[in-house]
Length: 590
Image 1: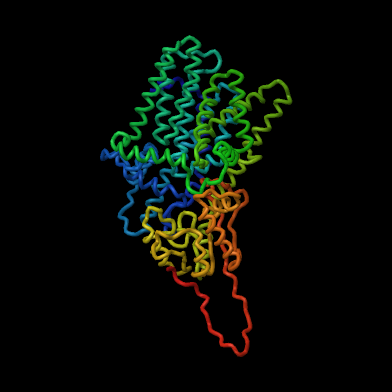
Image 2: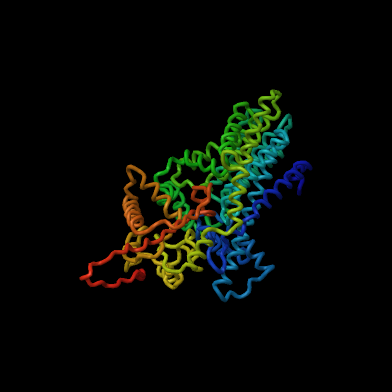
């Protein structure tokens, strides 16, 4: 069987395995961050509970392979389901009699999905080393692999139960096989090997698409080697045939991994169209008023990979292609096509750049090799630049990875503030519906938006220490965030909010011309803060230096703000007047 993959190089295996293990162990630190618990029944990550619930709709043993939900393809969800079945088989959860027990089961199921992400993240490190091995100096191959191993954004998302890191792994694996069509030196693969590499690249592209739809773009990596080989004597007929076979294989693999596309075509088309519209129309307030995706994703890479590494990696891809190293063209073409896709989108989460990190790391390895092997001492000295990038100078790298890992391995500020507010008692006002960003004030505080609002408010109103206040009109559907009536009518002792609720509206409030669809929300926000500054004073701000402002990196360390109501100003009434007492206790929630 191994002969089908070719002879395994002992050094590649040893070094690759060592890098894989090191990267995997690094990703295990903090992997239990924010899991459901007896104190908080939902994950601190807003997508994990939904991903788990959807995955549990799959039952391979019973032949049920559909989910009824196709915002994502189903390969990762199927793997998560199989993993949870194995875990439950070895350690049966028993009868679930309490919400605390149910939260414990969800926690270990989510952890299964996180382990899959961690394995895929570490696997990407091995693949990058394999891509560079024997094409560049061994130290350069090591540098490229380390650039991925310590990329802080890649590490953080490797600890989430989400589709993104697994999808990025299959993308870079597909590009690896595409690059194998153009081996280093004078090697000349036989026709059988070439055909096999085409099939492997297509297979992995199909797996990437079956994990996340945009992973299908991995197939473009085959364009460069097919064109080059056609010009070297294979002929255009062979290239066209290979292209056709690759497309068919990728589609078949996608349909096998996401059978709902055939078994539930109407549901699949509905959700797939929703995803297309979602990326083109935006994500509500989250990215409103921000720069274009082309600039925004550069900032994402600077934060989650590193400014130096991003620039060096991009220069390396272009430099290698200009020097006519055709195999680098595989990665450059993919990077350009993929960046054009995400740059045009209105949704700009960091996770969209994850497939680019291993690709840029290949460029880092190439530049390291050019510097390291240059006979000119000055050029060799320039190798300090990628080393500094890997260490985390100018953002990203090991420095940020260590800091963010420490955050994930230590108590979350939502837990700390929740305990503090419980001890203080009194009343706490919320500026919007409680969710993942809200301190742990009661177990159901992170309940999904899919839970009816009446039920979520009932959870909230049952809490007495502290009393939780939110202004809700008689018709709950008419409620709105940042409603100043919370301050004027309910008058809670404290008000708290998070950077998830604050940052986007604050950014829009600074604009000279606010987009029409957000003007009412910005107006409410400004009115609320006028009242807040008049009636309250900031008591605490839970923040960390270097906290990433990127939405889906901020999950691990949001900034939390607490304001306390100012004491009433004492006045001395005239002797002839009659005083009346008025209670300072807040009114109940309408």
